[in-house]
Length: 593
Image (cartoon, rainbow, N blue to C red; front, side):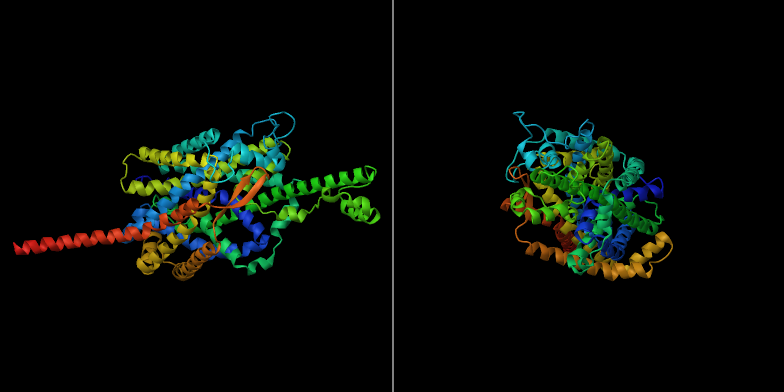
C-alpha cells in the first residue's frame, strides 16, 4: 500500500476533508450548540480549535509525512518502545469500523424506503385487526415507531436478545461492499472517490439551506441558535465539550491522518493543508448547524402551531363559539378570557387543555441518531415533495459516513500493510472488511442498538485522549522538539514558528491532561453507567442501568486499546534484555573456549 501516492495535493486535502467532515458535524455540533447557549458556544469552540485542534492535526500530518509509514511503523521508528501507540490507534479504529458502518446501513434503509408515495414514517401503520393504528405507534410518534420498531425492531433492554434483522444485515453487507470497492486499490482508488464524497454533501447542504430558510418558522430556529446564553460560559462542561468536539471531529489519534500523510510527497506543504482542513471542518459544523436549526425551527413551529390548533378547536367546541372567533394568534388571550368569564366550565377541561410553548419545543435537545433519523425525518415528512428531500438527505448522510469510513479502514490497513501481514492488498482489504462485517452483524440484532450505543460512548473517547496525550509528549519530550523542528525544516524549508512550538510543547499537553482527568473524574462520579432503553408500553426511551456483564465489557473497551501502550513497551524491553543476555552468554562461552 505504501508504494501508492496521492496523484496531487488536492486529493490529500479532499481525503482529509472527507474523513474529518462527518456525521458529527451534522448532528453532534448542533446538539452542543443547543445545549450550551447557542451562539455563545462558538467562543470556546473556536478557542479550542486554535489551542488544541490545529496544532495536533499539524503534528500528526508531520509524523506521517516524515516517517512514510502507518501509525504502528511511524511510532516504532521514533522509539521501539512506542509501537504500542500505533497498535492502540489500530484497535480504536477497528472498534470504530465495527459500529460506524451500521449508521451507513441505517441510511441505506431509510433511502430505500424514501421511494414511496407516502413516506413510511409519515403515519402510523394499521394494527392486525384493521381497527386503528398500532398502539405502540400511537403512544410514540410515527417517526419514532419507524426508527425503533421498523428499522431496529429493538428489544426492551440489552438483556433481551433476538435474531438478526435481515433487512439491516443486507444493508450492512451493501455498506461494506461499497467500502471494499472504494479502497481495493489503495489510495489510487480512494483518491478518485474523495472528489465525490468530499464535495457532494456540500451541494446537498446548500440545497437544504435554500429550502430550509424558506420553510415556515425556520427563522425561529436560526434565531435560537445565534442567541447567546453567556451564562453557559461559566460552566466547565461547556469548555470540555467544545474541546472534545474539536478533538474528535478532526479525527485525531485514530491513525488515519498519519496513514493519509504517509502517501504524500516528502516536500508536500502539510502546514498550509492542516490549517485549511481544520478551518473547513469547523466552518462546515457552523454551516450545517444553520441548516439543522432552520429545519429544527420549522419542526418546532409546526408542533407549536399544531398544539395551538388543537387548543383552538377544544375551546370552540367547549364554549360553542363561532369558527372565526379564535385564531392561532389570539388563542392565549382567549384562554385567559374564558378562564375569567367561565371559570367552572373552563375547569372542566382539566387535562385536555395543552400548554403550547415554542421555546419549550426549541429547548428539546436531541443528540445523535435521534437528530439524524427522527427529528430530520419528522421535519421532512411535513415538507412538500417530501420524497425528494428524503432521498437528498439520506444520500448526503451516506456520503458523509462513507467518507469517514474510508479513513477508518485505511487507519487499520496501512499499519498491517507495513507489517507485511498479507502481501496482496486486495486480500488484506477483503479480510479486514469481512472481519468487521461478521462482528458488525451483532449490531443488527434486536438488542444490537444498545451495544452500538456502548461502543459509541466508550469505545474511543478515553483511549483517544490517552493516545494523543502520549503522542504529543513523545514528539516534544522524547523525540525532542528540536529534532522535530529539523524534520519540519527538511520537509518544508523553514522551521517551526512560535505558535506551533508554544502549542505543542505547552498549551496542548496541559489541555489534554485536564481533559483526561476530567473524563476519569466524571466517569467515577457518574455512578453506574446507564443507557436509553426503548419502552414500547410507554412509547418512549427510559434510562436503564447496564447489567454487570455489560459494565465489565465497558471496562474491557476502555482498557483494551490503552493497555497496548504499556504492554508493547514491556514486551520490547524484555525482548531486548533477553537478546542482551544471550549475547553476553555467547561472549562468555567464546572466552572460555
